[in-house]
Length: 215
Ligand code: BG6
Ligand code: MG
Image (cartoon, rainbow, N blue to C red; front, side):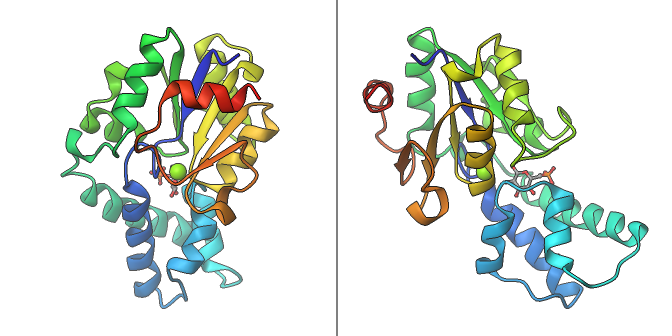
């Protein structure tokens, strides 16, 4: 039985995955590095450094240049999230969070982002969750299970009693590696290893998820 839900943030509770993509696209264009929406799929849920390394590929950059590019991408991203409000919580998310809390089930956010706390505050979600694991919490990023294990630990729960909600292949892999249940959001080819695959959280109720996971 499920005792805790761990939600990814970017692309699950809000549409910041699009802002991450646009910030990387701007950086890649300025650096004349080939990049597009298709290439961005591999970056979904992936840490800032790993994302940049995927974009630069075999091009030689010094550590200082990499640092400067990460800072630049983050400036573009931070600028784009300034206007986020509670209206930017994706459809269905708030209702599901309320149902989960109502049922006495714990809730954490498990995000690779170092900007997660800012985004959570702007969305007005801080009071809806019991714990936050973000880009500062652990050393090894998704697909390592560390971030979600940290979140489960924060909730005081056995990972086997937790379900992770993710939009990224790296996140589903991380949750499976951590021995957790998985709900994948988005096209099936991206999250097809999840226990449940849904297009998004619109109209999704806790009871339906519990039924599907107990089968
Ligand atoms: C993840 C996003 O949540 O956080 C990735 O899905 C992003 O796109 C990663 O690269 C790191 O975010 P940040 O804000 O620390 O650069
Ligand atoms: Mg995500």
